[in-house]
Length: 474
Image (cartoon, rainbow, N blue to C red; front, top):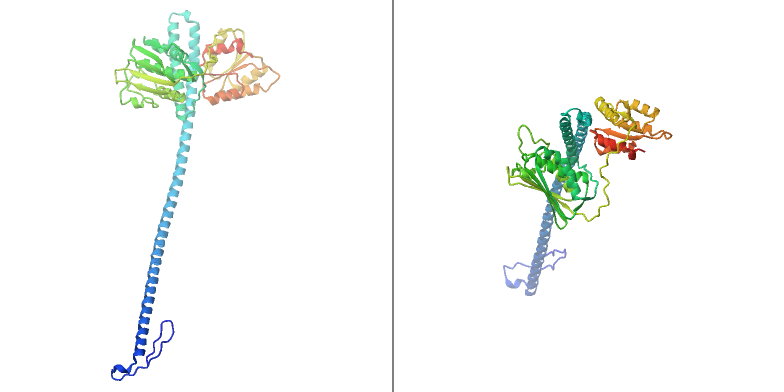
């Protein structure tokens, strides 16, 4: 008996086959055909299931490949996450490093500004009595034929020293961006006149010829008179320093569509091509002799560029090289605003005699010279050499004017005036601060302390005399 079992668990028909020595008629033909058909069906079923198995195997292999790819992606992702963490750590460290560097830079800038402010204060302290002594010499110049000459020398050198001190502070303001502008409508001629007036002693000293060509129609600019005058003064003084004796300097102004162009041209030593791209950088100077006859700190041109840029303008330089002179070209926008008046017109000196003045100053030389100058003008001067005694004298006596230094032993000048103003029953005198500090914060502190005026050493006696005149007395 031969039993055939189907793959689905059913049993095929059982066929008895008797072996009769291989006779063909031993197996009925119908049953043989049925047997062969069954075998064929089984083979087809086997082929089908084999194909299904192969497909399932292929699917499994594909899934294995996908899982392997996912595993690889996971490893890559983990590596990327690790790299991102490391990069983030470096970024955090770099951020802290940058913040630390910024803090150090700001601290260094603050220390520099404080140092330069203190240096300027210490330089102005000896300059103040020298300047006032020069003023005193000017008042007695007829006593000796040499006195006018000595007075001129001392006055010019004091002015030069004061200019250098201001340049030091301006260098700090340029690097820290602390320059502020007091804008108003100005005529360009007013700016040029102011610059020429300041530069004229330098030009006269070298017997140089200055020519000025301005447009017929007034040119109006919206700007800061002091800063723009300072910028053109620096350019003129720079020109006169590097131009030979008895040579010429030309100022020409050309009005364009929306701007005007000011050209300051000299036939001096010129500027080497390798220096020209950097000529406006801070502390940049061209070659100079060992005697430094041209002087300077390399600050002026950098300050000029800063002021011009703040006014929306540009500055450039042209020189064919050493020995061929230089041209500095400033271009600024023309303003369409009307001039409403000039609040900075110089005040003529209106002398007045017999004022009761209290001078509170701890520098003995400055105190002595200032008191002498005020006494020569006919004022009654009382002296105090520290803040505490100055406050006591001001509280116990009546004065028309108090001239008070800021940095004083005991209590400072701010506190003297603050304490004095606490007494509402007593009329306040005119309070004038004098100080070697010129920063805006010092002026603001003086204003908060209720000073009426703030003068920076060295104080021009003409300026002080104007403030003492009746129009300023409360």
